[in-house]
Image (cartoon, rainbow, N blue to C red; front, side):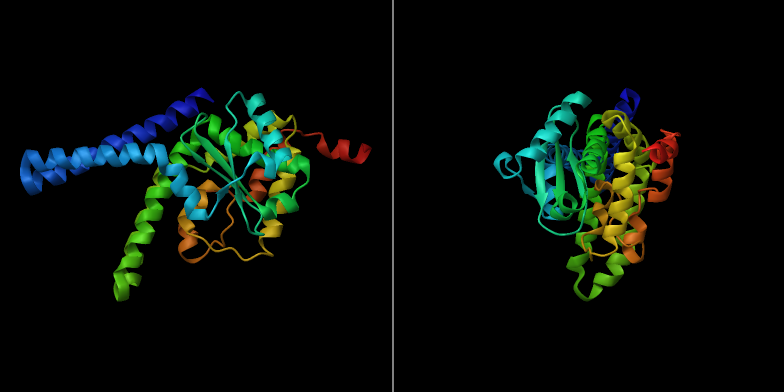
Amino acid sequence: MRLAAITNVVKVWLLLIGGCAALAAIGWLLGGYRLGSLLVFFGLLVAAAAYWWADRVALGMVGARELPVGESPALHATVARLAALAGVPKPRLYFLADGHPRALSAGRGPRGTAIAVSQGLLAATPPAELEGVLAHELAHSRRRDVIVQTTAVVIAGALIELSRIGGWFQRALLFVLGPLAAAFVHLLLSPKREFQADRAAAALCGSPHGLADALIRLEQASELVEFRANPATEPLYTFNPFAEDGLAGLFVTHPPVAERVRRLRELDPDWRDKLRAA
């Protein structure tokens, strides 16, 4: 767990250093030392802003609003209990007012994470399955996956939105910027992070079956509800809610649900016998 967290922090630092180096090179070529220094300073300001507010940008991209304790005390209590078990501060909770069942997390790490859940998720999942989903997102927070995911999503989302200023040239810009944004996301994120978060969530809940059942239920339910959003937000979710075609197909960072469920079931190899005995 600690090695994964260190790796994610190193990725962000390398991204910052690489970005500043690129800006310095551009500035040096265009205007010498002075312009290079100004661009590096500008890059550091943007990086600082991204560090502190990227989670709010990401949550704004998906249309989430903060969920007060009085509006859903049971959900807040569940998240607080799981966070205590995980040894991390309780994250802020956000709400997505639509019927598509999904959850996501964004932020900087254990001390700066937000988890968003949809109305569809709360309506579709029993308590054990909801706990599995929440534990999965808390695992991403503890491992600091969220800082890499959020950074990748904000930058990729900005590239996608940049294509919209092209007017009649928009399709050509999207043809160039879409694959570029997707390549950036895949460079930073590996599907292995989902397997590792699944395993950590199973340990946190004391059973892998809540999350496994939730993944099956969410995949089946998502086929019944139309979902549209910026495809660059795919890494934030517990599972991929997008149809894997067109532009959205470029941003798939989640492994297949069937493979995730298989690995979760293998954590409890006697589960079929227990089910028959029950």
